[in-house]
Length: 138
Image (cartoon, rainbow, N blue to C red; front, side, top):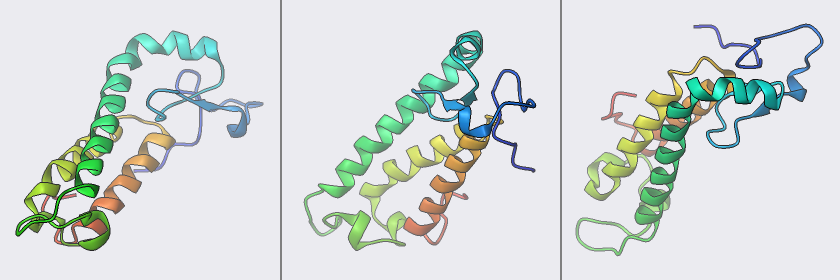
């Protein structure tokens, strides 16, 4: 798959529109627009995916906080994000975090935009860093 150029989600790549002049959707950060008019025009079709991405990213942040602030016991390490990198699947308390990351990746991958694909790739690389055995099948 070729990575799409940075382009407006509505009008695509156009002569005279610099990629630097595009802005991301403020909620999901996954699609680009050349102006507020095109963002408003596209919102009806983008709304459900946008809200889903935002909700999952919020949930991912909550799950990350749980992993960071976990009380250490026989089954759960303290702050596995720093102390058990690469071994996440063996720690049951990290699985909800990894599962929501996978859902973020899957949803971002449905969008044909450069920011979405770059974000999905970054999340996938992070998953592989946290769980080298790739139990989720990234």
